[in-house]
Length: 359
Image (cartoon, rainbow, N blue to C red):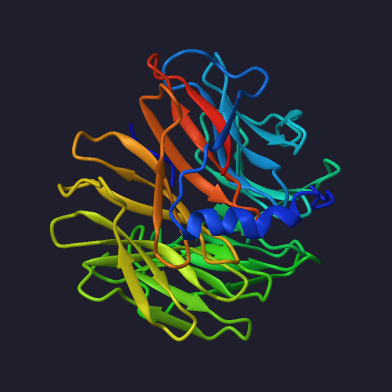
């Protein structure tokens, strides 16, 4: 199994935040509450089902589902549990939400036709209004990856008439798009700059592939200055999520192709970590997927039997692991400031289901 490569509602549960964070900080497994859910119309065959990728300011989640015809659709699940499925308007074959903000706005990409591999970006506001966009008339791929609270979007694109190099972009709330490249980004096929996350200060984190296709992390400040970085001793480094303070979480790959999680402080200090039970063979290890403002990180790890498990790492480094009861694999994808975690699990029939974990 290969994991995918995170509502405007009153925060009625906000008072519970210190308690939730304390449980994670102490490493206590305190009878977590799992809620399983499936998007309406989700398929029940192998490889089909529901795939949440992010959780918003309350417990609203987004992601996609694959139906019985193997066609992919987007969904938003509200804090109360109601699920709205959606497709970008028109003859759309594949809708892929990738990020939800605290206001319930979602961004991602879609394919217009089944035979097409051209990605077009979209933003869907909480009231269901869509905006679609491409970075330029020559862009064959426009792939938004993250949206901040105000609606600013970041992601990557590829132009049609050059090598298939990836470049970063930022789309302002008025639709204005600024493109950028990280230092030493390669210009060959599938080299270049891959933004993955933006915070409310306008700081962007991501990965860049150099001329040798080696992966490095980067951070871009609101003024446009981009800094590359590598975790100590890593053969590859990728930043996957950034919180409001500017702390980054992501993964590294060592010389043996084993993955490890990392966190990078605003001052540039990097700490790597491994979830308990993470495998130590090639393509096993720890993947940090999302970081919230208190510094807690959610993700997944692959054990020595190539099974997937979820984890939460508290700001003090304590790691709590979890599995959905009876699941074959459990993948952690997103965490919000209430400590709620979302992701998906895979049952014995290889069908995926969404879950929400309240610790």
